[in-house]
Length: 58
Image (cartoon, rainbow, N blue to C red; front, top):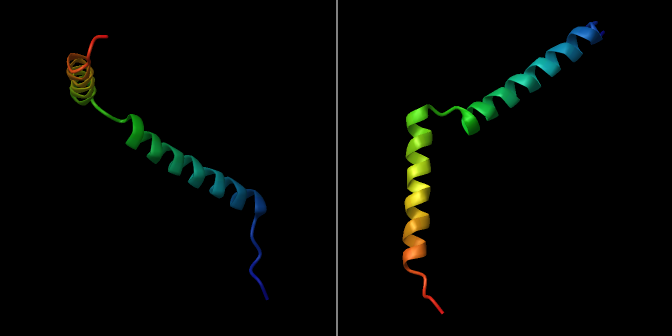
């Protein structure tokens, strides 16, 4: 015979696992410290300046 399970507990456990997975994704995307954010901002600004410097005026 099959084992009896509580559907409420199964539903809540599945929801908790989904929330944990979403939290892990957010940590990867947004979990950076201030130094890393500043470094990326400076690097993107430098890239934009370098690109603009190579532009030809018409």
